[in-house]
Amino acid sequence: AYRLEVLGDSLLIISWCLGLWKAGFQIYANKVCQMQALIEKMVICHGLSSRSQAGEMFRHVYRELNAEADAVAGRAENAGTIVTDSPPPRLLRLMFDGSVTTSRASGGWILYGADDIVVDDAAEWRVVAWQSFIFPTKVSITAAELEACFAGVRFLHAYLQGPEFARLHFSQWHPYNFAAVPELQLSERMSWL
Image 1 (tube, rainbow, N blue to C red):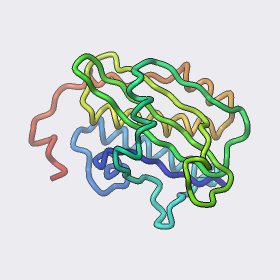
Image 2: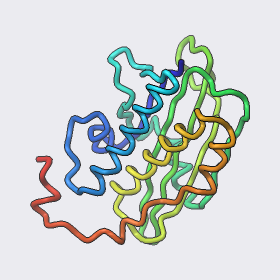
Image 3: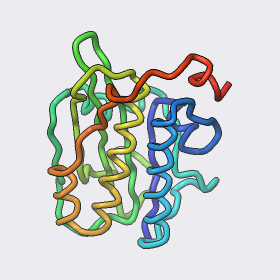
Image 4: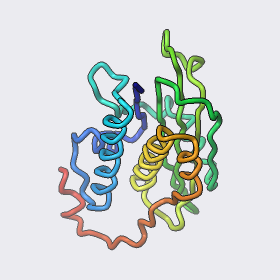
């Protein structure tokens, strides 16, 4: 059985994934539902459970603790790799981040693994895989963060199915084109308040 924690520095995205807040845009709500469905599949098919004693797989961390995922997102290139072809480690940590500048928007994630943890020190974790991607058009930081989280969860689902599925993720997955979604009224965006 695998134990997972998904970490990000966006309190909004983490709160949506935990079901604490409702996403105002339908497309955001759909992405959250897709992630929850993938997590549920991994729970059923692979015995996935939370690393947290509270049973929550998603956890907010401060920006300083998410620096490596921030660096991957900031690479702003369409790249990614599986660092090891060994069987998935028992303990998994997925970290994600989004990046938006005046000229581009990008996202990224890193999957770490460990078989045993003594003090939960960074030295006990090894990089299993990572991905950085660029959006085809300008998007909000919320969209970039959510898509990075979704991409990481989607990769993890493929990774637990086997190395061939994990490799297919990199060739078949592309960030969602949020520019194709019409703007909603302000009242619809603020429905979570």
